[in-house]
Amino acid sequence: MRVLIGILLAGLLLSPLQPAFAIPFFDQLPKFKVRVEGNRALQGWLREELQKLRKNNSVLKSYDDPRDVARYERGTLEKLLRSKGYYDGRVREYVSADGIVYRVVPGTQYRIKSITVDIPEHLRGGLGGLPLKVGDPLEASKVLEGVKVIERYLAENACLLNIDVTYQATVIRSENAARLEYRVAPSPEVLVGDVTMEGLTSVEPDFLEKKLQIKRGDCFNRNKIDAARLRLLRTNLISSANSRVSEPYDDFVDITFVLVERRHRTVKLGVGYTSSEGAGVSAGWEHRNVFHRGEKIEIETKANPVQQKLTSQLLVPRFLNDKQNFTAKAEISNEERDSYSAKAVKVGAAVSRRLSKHRTASIGTELKFSRVKEDVQETTDQSGSENYQLLSIPLGMKWDTTDKLLDARRGATAAIEVKPYIDLGSTGANFVKNTVVLTGYKTASDWRFDPTLALRIKAGVISGSTLFDVPADERFYAGGGGSVRGYGYQALGPRQVIPPKEPGGQPTLSDPIGGRALSEISIEGRFRFSDTWGGVLFVDAGNAYADPSPNFSDLYWGAGFGVRYITSFAPLRLDIAFPLDRRDDLDNGFQVYVSLGQAF
Image (tube, one colour):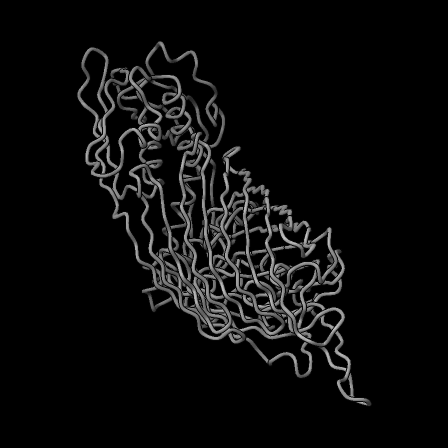
């Protein structure tokens, strides 16, 4: 049953029937059919395009009379026919109680009789083939693609001050044909002169100069200017980046970037709630330009009934290399879990290096001093505590192609971390903690409600020490809002049998003691009903294990639904989840989660 729910969720999102899927509450337009005799490919394309129109067209949604809808959509179908080269096509609409039927007679498809390109003579020889040729149908999409091909060629091979490519298609109805002409407007070729920046008040100019990647003597290219503006905005130091190009002089033009700095200080406040941990609050302060070269310092505190934490972090961009960042971090925390309590102080530093557009590697060091009190130990039913002094050297690698950090809709990630721990005291806690996390996102943007299929797989292994030699706060646990929804936080995993304290008594089970292995998998179907509201259906599964071997067959399953309020920054989420493997006296009937950002 649990596996079936996951299969049905994936099938719902991937089914080819999804474009026709409708929910009466959200569907107010009459149903329609498109009939094109003898051309099923054209019929299918017209139907898909009309479905896309209905999805986003506010004019259509304002019509109450189906006849008004039919007249409007008939005009759209006629335009679509012309865009495919059917200039003599006819459309008739028939309205009935069952919906609207459009009967299309496309006629003869017009084809290209000749193609000419009006371009400077010295650039003509390098222009490659266009996406269409003589004899091809006169399709608007390919004609426009031809404009882009010429613009791209000129941007890469010429230094034109302005690139302006237009086209003219002359229809010859007597021949069912057309002449196509591309024209490049005359423009001087120039080189880059002086490159300057205006408007900076606290950011050091030389820190941003390397972001421009434009220097004197370069071939002038407006695409490079736009790319430079985008890189400036991505520093998070600039709120506005415009450019000004001078009049040509001696075959040169000067470029001035007019910048407005952002406010570099931000105060953050947040709230959240989970059924197992209760309400939580967070507060933070950050400065994104501490030493005037983009250095960022963050101070944040989080508190809920079971955990309190104070963290400070310093980020130094372009550390010793343009592709490297340096991070230093310090943290004080206190945890009061069911099976253990822990007080800890951590300090550490790391260097991350961008290997390519999507790949990043990191190496660091961390020193952790902690006092962990465990309620259940391996050999006694009495509680005890241990002081730990652990040095770790985390190594990480991440591949990320997602489009948005807190609300990804496309792309995938793969992250692996290997974290060796060395005991500087006498506890014998020498071990290696390995974690792998994979995520993937696929959105069908041309389907109703923009469905996104999201998948997360996580596995972890701790090797080198026995279970009770590993500090309780470093073991793996499963359950909770970022793990297996429907179960309490850290409520899944191995438990210890506690012998009875009195003769003849019954043994009992401890709270979860954590494990040396972890397995988790989550599947979400995300839907957007409007620009600000969305919904989620999800299935989670996971468990922690005493032995260091993840097992994706011995899992606890949970399922549920959620609501998303979509903001410009990140969605606010409310999830309600139910345990499908509910255990008597251990699990509640449901769990509630409120937080910022998607679950993964």
